[in-house]
Length: 153
Image 1 (tube, rainbow, N blue to C red):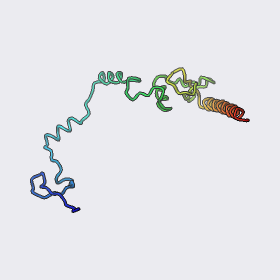
Image 2: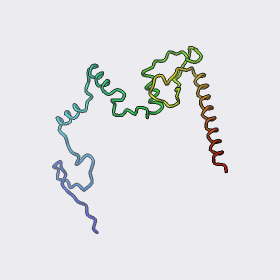
Image 3: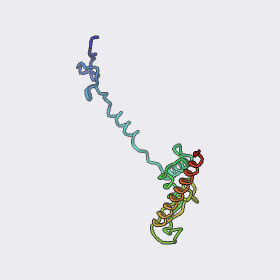
Image 4: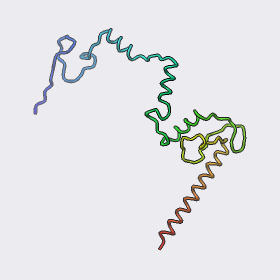
């Protein structure tokens, strides 16, 4: 098989032979100033009125948005959803202290329900999470023991 380079004349009209491969700059497509201006005008961001932006925002809010995941959303998405809809008071719902608070999930399922989240101070939130982990650990140990008893001859 013979290796040949296909050549043709440059598109700009200079008469130079150009190989098969693209040579940046020389045989690039040239655009007129008017065409470049039109491209620039089309690609610039259009300015919308606040009413138009609000209308679009409302039309694609929550489950109307094509990217909406609902209850399948992750940890951060659910916390962001809560942050937008349930403002913090700065008061712990457990001990009543006025300090920095965090949202704690009650059901441990991270559903999009406002009642499923409580506002706790950092120490109470840590205690709550540790107690939940202990309970889950105890339940897991009981389940393993039950399975071992069932499997024993």
